[in-house]
Amino acid sequence: MRSRHLLSSAAVAVVLAALAGCGGADDPATAPAAAPDVIRLGTLVPLTGRSSPSGEAMVKAAQLAVSEANKAGGVLGRQIELVVGDDACDPGTAVTAARTLVGKDIAVSVGGYCSSATVPTLKIFRDAQVPMIVAQSNSTDLLSPGYDSVFLVCGTVTAEADFAVDWFKKLGGKKLAVVHDGTSFPITLAQSTVTAAKRVGGLTVTDELELSQGAPSYTRIAASVIAGKADTVYFTGYYAEANQLIKDLRDEGFRGRIAVGDGATDGPLLANLTPAQSKDVYGTALLFPEFMPELADWSARYRAANGTAPGPSTVEAYDAVNVALDAIKRAGSLDHEAIRKAISTTDMTSMSGPMSFHPDGTRVTPKFLLLRAAGDTFELEPTAG
Image (cartoon, rainbow, N blue to C red; front, side, top):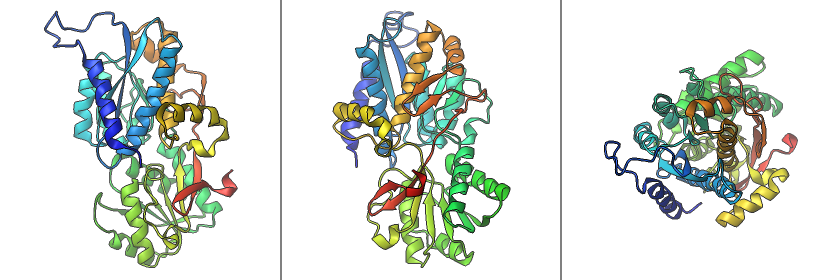
């Protein structure tokens, strides 16, 4: 588990640095200069709450990209500054934090972990003409407004659902129960999975179930899964609920495959599970540097900067910053519209692979991994290597 307090303090320090010298807009003596000597990028991630380890890791990765750019001379002759906000994976908190970032004259927003917190910020950044390069959030709800200023580094839930259904069938699944928590990313991934299963055939959906975040147990859900005779369960929510759901499924006698989406294949999902409980537990995941030899050099740089190995969520956060800086460089200015146009024509090789976007802002070549529990950790599914 990463140190929440240490990084949260660092994040606060970054924000304070960004705020230094900035007063109210009506005060000429303290208003931001028309041409600041730094380029500010804003990132909203969870630094409090149960998803804080992921948010903290994202800040470390984004700061690494910023530090490397500054060491190389910056962009447009200016240094880069990362302004960090805590959205706590909470919609209301995210809205307030987004407004704060907009007030700090950021050129681009490069955050986003929980879709439920990212979605309500879309209009705020749009109204301020601030382009968004969304590092992790990938709910199709992000596409619903049809904004041309939102770009997703990760594949959408539609792509993840197709990947998941294909693997469930390869692993021998015939009957699938889908469980979500009712929030944006989980429910859209669940719906996309049901749609994919019906479209390709060969995998019958026995149940579509919703659980409550933070509940002490999910025995009712487990009983429904068993009654429906599913051989595979796909939970599309986050790791705190996933951990409890796995325990309850096993304790109630479910012996089939349990898979989780990329929001749960992260953090302490496998904490305190017995070998019997973690047997045949899988995860559809975004990028895990430890399973990607091609990221060895980058992983070494991350470790040198932070003292820990990079985990999930880090590569995409690093890439989001570099996509923003590449666009600013090509735009040749901090004009928001010029930067937006430059992002839309991105064609670069990032740490996570080729980076370019469809007209709707989705990534052209998303990548997912299938992981399998091995004790209290994950390994790449052998047949997925």
